Length: 130
Image (cartoon, rainbow, N blue to C red):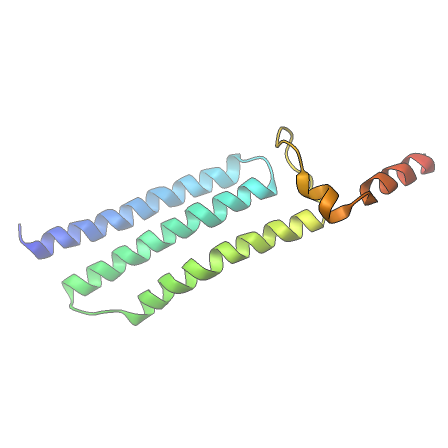
């Protein structure tokens, strides 16, 4: 085996690993209980899977054709920057819209800081209206 063939196999392994991580991400989206943990699965593992696939394609074209793809490099950088930010904004919007945490999530320390006693007033108004 030549060095080019070994590097091509390495590129295929990167793409295969990216596909496996993508399947794990999809399973996490199905199995996890609330929007916050699903967002974690979507952003962390899906970002990793896309980056692995793009990097594998970059290595393949670089070694096989001698072609350095600026589009693949820009795709890697763009996904690396935007996907975690988008996941953070989805979770922040869900939290500020008061989407409840899953049962067993633990204490919500941010609730008092962000909303204060607002929640107590809302509960008392609901009870008074009954």
